[in-house]
Image (cartoon, rainbow, N blue to C red):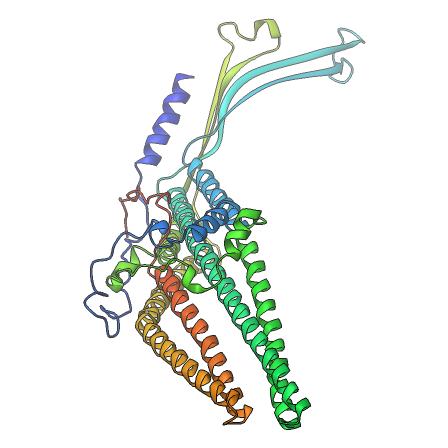
Length: 488
């Protein structure tokens, strides 16, 4: 028993101290410019820690909705279980580094007849008995070349990739809730504006109908006043439908029906100006994204896993050493099973060397190397996509603000034009057509203002998400790579 234990401990120590054939990992250079296109000094300022999403999403109702989504969103629940499964897979791969000891107990009782064995002592049956109790390890592979350690490291990197993918999903859910709430408020504001316009047009239509009845108006004036009423009625149904769809999307993201108080708080948001605005965030440099965006970190860990698989594929070319060992006691009498002198042990090492495999191992190594190159390209594409998203959002930050200012000026100008046109119509100086044109222009400008403000606020949400803000600090930290002795 002491011999077996000493051999097992020695095998474990040898396996744990062995080297691996994983190629040295070097992070690929970021295939993007060092600065943002047309970046200002503010954009290139040092990047701030933006993991606390509550510092950006400052509206109390929006914070409440996001908190509900983080707790109940089904996509996040799926992602959590995927991370748990990846963690368990790493434990499975890592467990292969250590021998698995099994305990056993058995009995073998056999009935025989003397005639079968050509014994003349008796014609009756007799019984043979054998009892055994012991423990041992079965087909334990001594990881001299690091195949198991490479597979374990690959599983760990896949686990980290899934963990960062979960954080990327978390960012998408947070941004989705904010965008859906903004969409609901924008459509609610458009609905109220359209209701006001519809009421005004109906009153105008009634007024024109009275002038026609008195003989001071024409049927043309009546038709011109009636058409805008139906136009507003149609637009009203569009915004009511879009508001309901935004609410349904918000409910889906949150993952649970909204309670009465939350619904009332949402309905109280009658215009986008009621939503607490978002603060400006420093963009930092493009290189900041590599350590801040979870989708980039996930892509890099997937690349690391592919790099680890090369080490496992290389180790397949070398001999495999497996050990099977047992130790215990055996006796043909159960009462003597644990007496002195009944011990028995067995050690059976086995070495397997691949001699001919028709190119299977070479093809597997080529496949692993090709997969690594694929993951390098995918990692670089992820960085390029992130760069584009941030660059677009930075351009939008300034242009949407200027667009909204111009739109507000347009609304003010159209409001003055409509007021003057209505006064001249009421005084009988101009036909109703001039008033109709001015009213329609004001209505379109008001809707355009809602759209411009929604785009500006949604762009802020997009920029914060694109910069990697809002992901949880609870994500497992990447420890120093446990495999640092490598050959080849």
